[in-house]
Length: 291
Image (cartoon, rainbow, N blue to C red; front, side):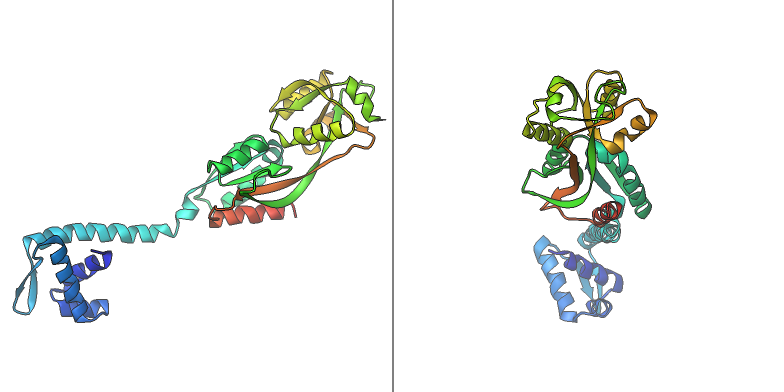
């Protein structure tokens, strides 16, 4: 039994004969007759009484029509609404903190204008957590800073940013360029482990002979900026996030000879993921943002 059988059966119910039903459906009359016989054989019932040239529903036929109408109506409704599913469903995004703070709000606002009925859920966390969430199908698209570590993930290179050294305005380093070795004497305020920014900073410093001493570890960039402003240590943080503090003079920038931190942003998704229209639009908006 197929949905085609049910559609033919309902056409016969409406028209009262196989010939008239065949004309409405633009199929051959024997095809209609075969479909009705197959239904009757499958369910072991008689659906029509054949009186003269007309067909009249039996009690079993009446029950069949009730179910068939419901089934076909649900299918038609599903097919009609399925055209809008992608645009009325949920898009799950993950982002590292820098992108989530600076660029993502504007991007999601533009996406919401394109798809007003779309629910856009956002998770802000470190880059490692974003990658793991994509692999576990907890989010659809992810934006991270730094390298992608999983071959199952497709990645699109976007723009980038710069990380800068920060200290208290009265620190001896403030506004100066110092040798890398002098950092060994300084306590560091770091982002948490799993942060792409921290990975970049630690690996670069160690390559320059610096063994940083983590004093604070935090998921909050603002917490680290506040710690630097209180003179608790030095930090390396994204310029885009600390610019307001630099402008206020609550922290100062300094430079280290031979060390500069630049990194690239990436948009990630699982290689087996079907890209819906909203997902493709999100990718396009990200490319435009960092064009």
